[in-house]
Image 1 (spheres, rainbow, N blue to C red):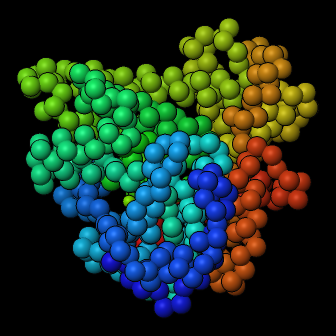
Image 2: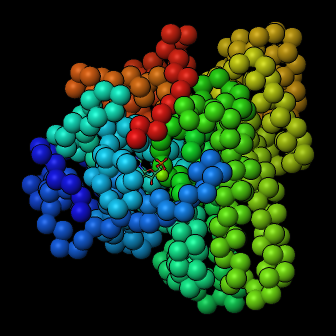
Length: 466
Ligand code: AMP
Ligand code: MG
């Protein structure tokens, strides 16, 4: 059961998300709502903590599970069927190991800001429904105020859930879980002859698309362990993640990722590695003959790289204002040249594409050129781009939706958290969330949120906050 909160307080209620879900906010503002969401409810239906296994940083952990989360239930949803509602930071469960099961206000606000930023960018993600102050004190490096995140997700089933089913329950367990996943999340596969193979295909497809979308906005997930990879293809687990400022393909922020396993440019190969773990659990149902099964699975996993490349290049095409007359090989080359030039000149990823969007729309290219360390190289890059770019007004307009003007920059996220945690001032948090909800249009009053950090503002490491 969730642990009781001594003095629960609704800190933030995401009324935008409620509106999307078609739910009136009244109950959430009531005593009964607050009690249910803060661990103080009656819970006629017992909440559940889910078991899962994982490869964490490549190391096999046979039993993990929700160590500080309780799923309260599901909301019926007319478009997708159901949405999970989970409390995070709600106390110890049988999977807590040595953890206290709690969350600090800072880590909860961080997940709120970044997951909502992801949703604002139109990238599949778990969502943040509410932040509740618990009144508990949480001991970390120092004592912090405790909080709970009310999180929604299409599903909390992960690659690690299949790994757990395989090792703890064997083939029957995996089959039951696969049947559940198909029935609830991919019902169109129910009557298909090769439904397990098709399940693998759709999971591969969603991950290829998701990782491409992350990379196209400079996002680094930070802990792509198999327990943090959702079967339905949503971004899940906002621990030490970050949007990068200046571009570098090997960029890592996570304080625990010492070897760069989950660096920006590593994410496709790690996703594929995780998908191979998922595929391994499905093998017995894909074909009765083990060799045949292996051939089939391998051919589907081999599709991941081209699928990812296609999704990434299609996105780069939009970001760079390039129409279909330019071949995919040319777009690949242009992407590589562009990212290479950005690495060399340590150019801010978001600023670059924002200024390029303005240049394409007819503004002067002077600011864009200033980003390059070497004038000659800037001119050469611009000439190359100009030789390939489209003049089609629709493509120019479409560039904006591929190039956010504002992202959840680390220093602004930290600033918002610090104001809230240290000074109980939630105005920077509110302002940042509001701006990130519409990242393609920046209110002139919010240009401060757009600018990259100065030397003293730079945040170079992010933490799990567990
Ligand atoms: P993560 O790296 O955030 O995916 O977490 C890995 C595992 O540690 C998950 O099973 C979490 O539920 C668990 N965990 C993280 N923080 C805590 C905590 N404060 N108390 C108990 N379990 C935790
Ligand atoms: Mg996790």
